Image 1 (cartoon, one colour):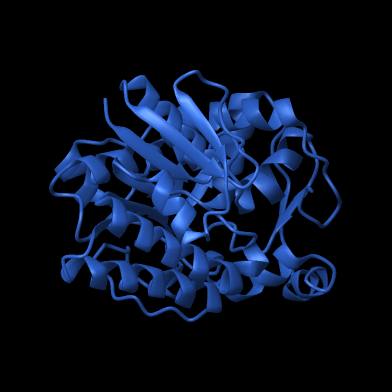
Image 2 (cartoon, rainbow, N blue to C red):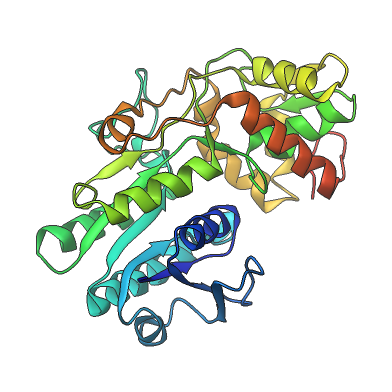
Amino acid sequence: MGLHVIVGAGPVGTATARLLVERGERVRLVSRRGTGPAHPGVERVAADATDAERLGALAEGAAALYNCANPPYHRWATDWPPLAAALLAAAERAGAVLATVGNLYGYGPVDAPMTEATPLRPNSVKGQVRARMWTDALDAHRAGRVRATEVRGGDYLGAGAQSVATLLVLPRVLAGRRAMAPADLDAPHSWTYVGDVARTLVAAAGDERGPGRAWHVPSPPPISLRALAVRTAALAGAPTPKLSRMPGPVLWLGGLFDPTAREMREVAYQFDRPFRLDSSAATGTFGIEPTPLDDVLTETVAALRHHRPRVVDGQPPR
């Protein structure tokens, strides 16, 4: 039984903690408020993960340090750099593998399916932040200071996932109401299950082939937002979805009052064209197959109905 330290108690951090506990590992979950799954095998610790000294002490003796944190969307440029630096320093001090949950922002606009070899050419502030985090970790890995890996997925589905689908579209589909999204509703798009993110993260951290590179989370074949809504409605017994594309000025105006809507402007390109993920490398290396989409949507529906997000005309649930 080894020690595994997870920073971040959101959907991926929680799924990672549960997966490791089920495998008989000792888990320490660090978050600002000490939240996380109430499981006897999970030690929940309230701490500021930007405090490198404190985090280093918490990670002492750990086999892996998992970066599952997610600062407020509108504060990435200010909150991520000190947090990423503290995680890197703590992993180096502990001799632990640093396994980070990344995303696809660093690639910028692309016209072909993204692979791990796709160059990092971010065209957004958030993309630049994520690309710099990985570049710093990879430089430290190549210098022999730490063993680092990163897993990247598409927009999330599953319990607790927050994406255009789970915030703007599916709650309204389940309520039988018209949904609007700032997207080409028929463009193929890659969606990733939070449980598969956890599986890939743990595999990349625990396999000697994992560190030194990034991995794409095994994800189902791309499917458009419209097709996703139609399939969800069918599984949930909801009426046929009514969808409309949100005009650009509506998103712009929403950003005047909502910081999340404001930040969505610079990454809206991801929904203006096909945005496809090639995850064959992780499947071929670790043997991880994506969870069937119907299973993912069934879990997503159950979670949305349990939490009953408030549906507001023209705005994401809050």
